[in-house]
Amino acid sequence: MKIKSIITAAMALLVSTACSGGAKQETVMNKEGKAIVVFFSHAGDNYAVGNIVEGNTKIVAYYITELTGAAQFEIVTHKYDGMAYTPLIKLAQEETKNGELPEYEGDVDLSPYDTVFIGGPVWWGTYPQVMFTFFKKHADDLKGKTVIPFTTHEGSGLANCVEDVKDAFPGANVRKGFSIYGHEVRTEKAKVEKWLNGL
Image (cartoon, rainbow, N blue to C red):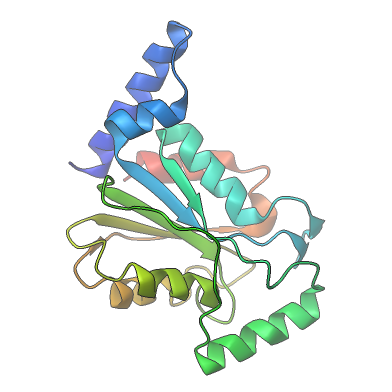
């Protein structure tokens, strides 16, 4: 099923259930949409937006779920909790340089989903290394699925994220990615909607 069809069907279902006072988005998506947003997001001290309670990527993930009904899995690690921006980027640089694979909490079964959105901030030219831990664990789980990368950033755009997702999941149909400035996510939901409508 093409992503446009998935989004159209999910949105139609959300409208119909909303009119009848209906089911939660989670129920609608699990039944019909077969899409999931997998993401890592960093709250706390962030470049350009200061100390934030909710990470930039998490807000974009919420938009995707709201607009499509997609399920969510957040890649969570407490390794970076409470770190100021400068020590964090130094640690991220070391992790990238050394190819470290930090652990994350829990996991998800991707088999029910046809479409997987993958999102995170850009740290040193690609996704944070904890996302590569997830990629390695699920390397064989996305064969034949549609994978759509997205990033939040402050000037890096998509960087190497799309290429790295293609390398991690060679059997997947990796679509053109989407990027948005972190400082825009709280006011530019329309950009996310426009991107989704264009898929």
